[in-house]
Length: 316
Image 1 (tube, rainbow, N blue to C red):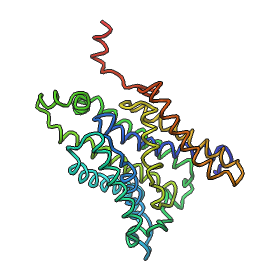
Image 2: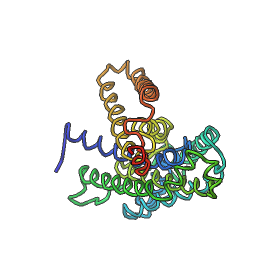
Image 3: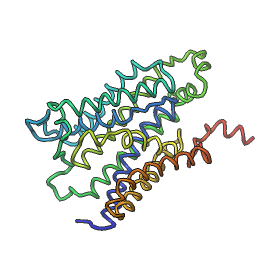
């Protein structure tokens, strides 16, 4: 069944919001759980997207590919590759904190993006990779609604896994490290190893988000992973929704993407002479919104909940 008009827009909006929700959950694993200030989200986003595209596209002399693997194999490859990259970066930056980690990760993310842009034998350079297939291609089920259901299933699955990690003993130790690292070290916890584990898991989730993105869009190029789209928006989503709260991460992704895509529709109605200025105003709007959230509600729309045992003691 073909959908048009407002229904088509809503399906597209929810699909992209779902992809960003997966990315935001990955960031929440790093920042919300352990306080790791990763500004290189775009790098893992790009690695996941390109890996899945290379594994699933038909052969081409312009770039590495021709494997023609199924959709799930592409996503598995995105997860594994992003995990490996996350492990390497994590080993290099394991002892860095806050602003030092931020500088290191954003530099590494730019190295990844520029490598994808210039290594034409691997990625076809600035021309990108086209013809990335959707799951269930060449069947009657190959529709935008079907892909929305698939993305929603991945959002639910990732949320379930991350939420289970949050309430597990492993998750409690990660939050203890975030709140008081010296006390955690004094209790005998291996801080570097636990931080590395959280960083790798978060990177893997971001890679899956990249794979979901490329199979919906059907095309990938380095321009899609500029810091504005691949890092800044995701940070705003997590802060707006509530750092440390997985439901807040999903809510923030939906709301901020709604504002971003809604303003794009409004600016598209302006005369062509104002299009450049309007694009800059959209970025300014998101920046102002972030400042308002930080000042008025720094804990986000859905703040992180206190552990149940502590909450019960407070009630008594």
